[in-house]
Length: 417
Image (tube, rainbow, N blue to C red; front, side):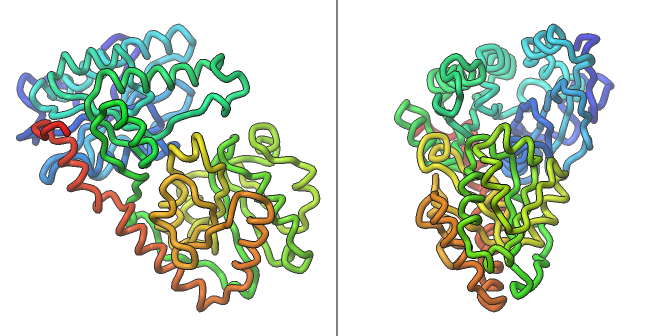
């Protein structure tokens, strides 16, 4: 550990033997996010960590906190053992040095906690962290297999500069390395899993997971008072916010007066600058549209519990086909049915008229017709959809439902496919 790094939530005494309470090997998950409650990647890794360890053990998570001026909100998380690394200073040279030395810093932090070779059964790396340095150092030092978690596959058409975009080049390089250096991967969708399988990787498809116990019972108001819609997230180019607003603008004035759309996660100006939203369309909408900007997770959960439907409209190919929107499991967990078009594996989890309303496509008129259907619902129609949404989430997305499959897949003694 160099003098640029501190460890939070760790025992600073050095131990010569195994970590206390560790009587058999367990998985190690390494991240570099605002873990555990940051972006969608952080949330995914949290639930994977909770279901990765066999009963009687806890997954060890070593997370290298971003050098962005933010601070971890907590050092203890139920169901896992967490070590948080922080790098002092935020200048480019410091950040680069910390990134290059990350696998060494991870190993030193583990040793200070008392974790030695033999205490770790498998290393789970997000695809974005699949570098030669991380793979080689962790693989050789811990003498255990490395498994990657693939939650996205970007398309060059998503980026204005295409192959000249550094992030996109790093993403494709990590994917290339994963298909050559690892034998097992967890994939977020069947499309992405199929891509990896065709390159000889053994794959387990695991959609975004949730902890259903975090979500309170829905408390939305009666539909007679109007339809409460929610979009929560950062749209960028992946979510078609402009299409949603255009669909609302094509409702009759009487119907628009009954619609309230809340947009959480982005401001009006940021949406105009970074998404497909045309401000002139927004100005023509007479429905109530509220931008909340970035909000804490607790606020998002409260908004979901108060909304009648969450909205999600996406393209059908490329990034959307390979990924899986984490908004859907969270919305269903809150008892908030979804109003969306089918992409990725959503058809396997959302039935039209059961857990939500499925759009015919991803055009403005498809959105208009979907909202018109929602406006015709009565409270006695909506309540069973809300209950079905929560049941679907508990059966298909709760991390407890996946524990047996994930632990079996990560078992180092498991024979290759």
